[in-house]
Amino acid sequence: MSALLSGNAWVNPFLGVLQAAQVALGGVAHVFGFAGDSHGQPAWPWPKRLAVEILLIDAGVARQLALALAATGGALLLAIAGLFWRKLRLALFAAAVLAAWFAPWPDTSLWLADAVPTSFQTTPFSVEAVARGALHYARDCAACHGDTGRGDGPRAASLVRWPPTVVGPLLGHRLDGELFWRVQHGMHARDGAPTMPAFASRLSDADTWAILDYLKVLAAGGGVRDGDGWPVPVALPVLDVRCGDAPAEPLARWRAGQRVRAVAIDASAPPPLEDPRWQTLLLSRDGALPPPSEAARWGASGKASCVAVTPGAWDAFAGIAGIEAQRFAGSQLIADRDGWLRAEAKPGDPAWADATLLCAAGGGRGERVTRGRADSLTSLLLRIDAEPVRYVKGGYVH
Image (tube, one colour):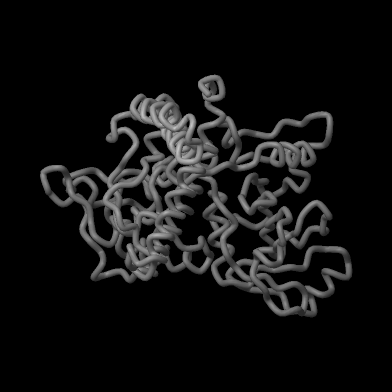
């Protein structure tokens, strides 16, 4: 067992299993009536949860916890075997007691964290929520947290504690539901002094979730502008797509597990040719969509003709790409088969010769994609496929 845990490659799947087990446990508690509802979703009924963010930082604690869980699980199996194997019952029971007794549990402060009823709640990341969140952020948050989310608003210096920047891994190391709770119920220092007011009387639940979605856009765009790529993985936002004169349909149904290339178009940047390696999603400025007849003509000429019809898609993708909305035309982004946005090409780079990999394994975020034996785009796609995003909220980022 120790040999299997000698490296760190096992940590991410281990954190994933722990997180899934917690969510499942909370669901079972809700089904059987041990947990009620909080803010319209099932509540986490316990005051503590597994602290995957600490296990991320200290692989030694994660290793110790994995060994303790393995020893405890082995003890349980030995005890069950003793119930059915009479001849060796005493020996099996004794072995079970020893295994449980010597399980190397780390101090609980290292693997348990304070929880709130909304710890494991979340909502889909959507274009509509980003647009809504931008308005509420400007009204209720920017004065302290700054227009770009770096904690440098005009009121920041007067606060008990300087607001943290969201342009970094902070959002990835905090559960969405716990960020929601802090916005709704406020935050306090150890001495009880308020460090952030509660917004429950000012913001609805939907408004709060929308602000959190907008923070993800601020974090992504800020990371790109800093040259570091996205500090946390960014998923394709929920939106509706129209192809030609067909009815609009949800993005998830339209892409059906395929790669997606999002392309910002206007008069100076017309639709590109369709490509069998992906589904092409056209983004039009300010919702100024072409009429169905023109989109159908695009399709007949071999050009991409599927357009995002949800208002705000242009601004949301421009923010994620870290480009001003008025300069976004001609930009392209690629999402992998799992729906994670991965790479960006600036305007004037149709061949992806100077693409930037914004979400990569091994800390390679924000790096230029170098040309290999194959063309640059093929090399980029092969690398994306070979390095899938393995993301545990609160744990590993890539």
